[in-house]
Image 1: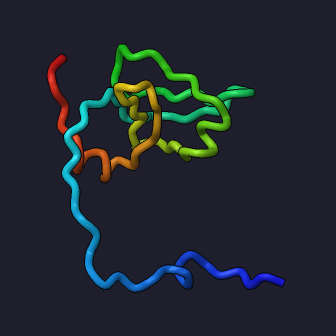
Image 2: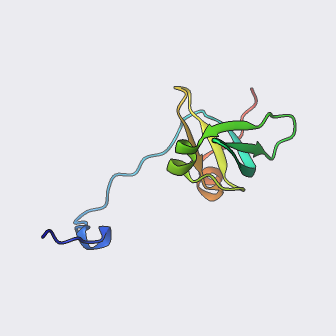
Length: 97
């Protein structure tokens, strides 16, 4: 029978640190006020007024785990994801359209 190990037990010690990168992407994003289940999907309500709610699939929500306070993010290629507030705010600055 195979032995199951946690990711921490499988991690090799780093002999040297990984290279660092600075993000310079332009994305569309809104901070999340509410995430509500509306079968069979979820509806994300933005904190910003005047922006329509965003409907996402249950699969998307299961994969991303969007939570109020974090950010719904859409990349130029159409890929959509969730970013916790701290990570997003440390990496992005609002720009004028």
